Each structure stands twice: as C-alpha cells, then as structure tokens.
Length: 126
Image (tube, rainbow, N blue to C red; front, top):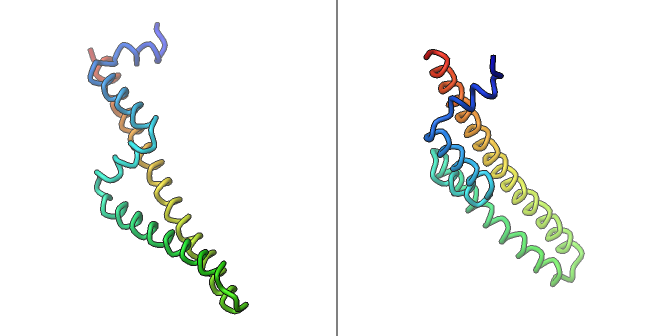
C-alpha cells in the first residue's frame, strides 16, 4: 500500500498545480500580498488604514520638525509626546496590515488544503 503522500501526489491535477504556482508567487512577494488585499472584500478598510497611517506618519514628521525647532520646555514636552503618540498609531496601523496579510495567507493555504482533500477524495472513490 502506498503512503498518503503518494496518494496526494497522484490526485494532483494540472489545475491544482496552477493554483499552487500562483499561490507560491503571491507568498514570495509581500507587495503582491498587499495587492491581493486591496482587491478583496476588505479593500475599503485597507485604503482607510493606509490613508490614516500616511496622515499620522506625516504628523509624526511634522512633530519631529517642531520638536527640534522649539525653545520652550513646555512646548518641547508637548511635541515629544505627540511624536510618541503619532509613532505608536502609525505602527499599530502597520501591524494591522501585516496581520491581515498573514490571515489572508493562511486562508489561501486552507483553500489549497481543501482542494487537496477534494482531489484525494475523488481519487479514492474511483
């Protein structure tokens, strides 16, 4: 009797191989992963987070500029706190985007596993 791996290899079709190749190309490039995110159901959320992230990054750089040009201690502390806050918010947005890309990657892998199981089930019924 053959092992389960050999049965899976036998059950693979050309269509499955195309899906695997496309999946490998997407997983190899984070920019392609981001593109896929902008084409899905959550595209509006990706765009919204990117716009806010860019805005907060701009505000952080503006705060850095003001921080180094300020002379009063009270203002320096205020600009320093704003640098920290805008930096943290920007990083939280980036963390959300990267976690979404990871989630999408896991979903793609689950779909590939479902396809493998369907192919194997079809092969075993023959």
